[in-house]
Image (cartoon, rainbow, N blue to C red):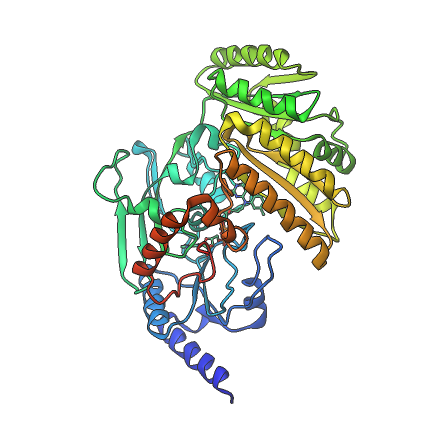
Length: 463
Ligand SMILES: Cc1cc2nc3c(=O)[nH]c(=O)nc-3n(C[C@H](O)[C@H](O)[C@H](O)COP(=O)(O)OP(=O)(O)OC[C@H]3O[C@@H](n4cnc5c(N)ncnc54)[C@H](O)[C@@H]3O)c2cc1C
């Protein structure tokens, strides 16, 4: 037996004693399943996977890993797009899927306390019975722990905020195994350093989240939706700026470029006009107020040269009008079965959105060998470019070059290298440019203080 095997066996024995034999695995399929996310980053096998079922077990695993200097990486659903949960240094992956309960619903306060392995779509099905929902919506059925760790956002962020804006308190296991509670159930909080928001978006590099108290929203009484086409992507992007400036308050405002519409029509016969689209949704207390908003919206769209405009009141109309947008990523992925993909993620102040889209379109002209699609949570100034390519070093280099250019441009416009997908592996090299050396050093000090042995999700976020 070699030393590595001997070590793995002794770690295995220790973890089995802590968690029970069925909650630890060194099986190749379990390790394989926890080696890659949904990004094009290289897979890395962990040495072991564990499924704790209590905070105490997470704490004991952390203390053991810390004592022995073993890398420890949290795992939700593995739906990240920047390599965030890939265990690049091996070690132990902590899969939170068994910590998946709603601990308490405080319906009268619009709050819920949940475990990290709870999937947000499943949670919203339960919350619907109380007339409530958790608004951040990343599309994939992500776990609450993964959403908090990545500060996930999505189509409804323009009205309800990102995950960061909807978390009041956390329970976190530190690298040492110590358990800390941050925040409170008060919506207003001003008591000292904001540790809750330090852990949100830290991608499991500062602590493992074992519980979150979430802020919920009432399910809207009435909804409406509209879709509009424009003569150019630039005109659609300009319309986004005008709509936001008119304080219409959409609950979602998405841009989808022509190439994506063409692909949707080809794959599923949506029969959509082949032009850049805006998809909008509004939430309100009465049909009358929503009808007013739709009227104002139509006026603005017409002023911006809109070519077609369809709108409707009610959930059925919304589902019908939004069908293409809701199924966009799934259909595009299915239409390119033999290729891999990257979904870039940059965000800028809303006034710079048209410039960002225009830059992306121009840069894509140099990538005509690939199928590329632009869409985004336009109301937040957040844009994605999805690129499908062959898994060759040459094409990886082309995609990386395009992404780097786009990030530089977004930062130059006062924006960020990521609006919602996080830094993971892919965006580490942009941290210094975006934040400056002094700010990155502060982050390094924080990391050093909370995780001196560097065991928590090593190789992520910090350059
Ligand atoms: C088709 C598609 C569309 C998407 N659209 C969006 C979108 O619109 N908006 C958006 O924001 N994202 C989007 N995503 C990305 C992804 O769904 C989100 O980043 C999501 O938050 C990841 O959650 P997860 O449960 O899969 O976490 P994972 O990918 O498993 O993990 C995410 C990070 O959290 C850490 N982690 C997991 N659990 C814990 C824990 N309990 N404690 C500490 N750290 C932990 C991991 O180590 C990792 O760093 C999309 C992904 C796909 C595949």
